Length: 136
Image 1 (cartoon, rainbow, N blue to C red):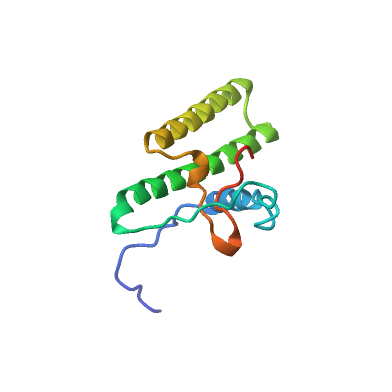
Image 2 (image 1 turned 90 degrees about the vertical axis):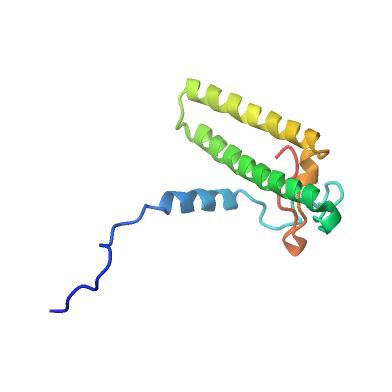
């Protein structure tokens, strides 16, 4: 019989399957092709142009972009839960109020730093824009 190597005992890690499923669900909500949802929309999303003179502004814009992406993913997941009937009326009301407050706060932060929510959409080249068009 072979002795166990020294070290800490193996423990089962956290079950990450629900996280993977949530990410899979979020990705499925994106358009099948990058240009199908944006072909008839306004001008293409802008790329971030970095440089020493604009580093702080670019960093703020990047952070706001990541927060907006997460906010939109959370909103989509919340809508899926509502549509699935997983929440009671009180939970739906609370969720709706929270999502509205979060959207308003993001708008305020963008205004504070001289951006609009549309300014946060990055052009990912052949993949299309990072965020779906406003209103979707």
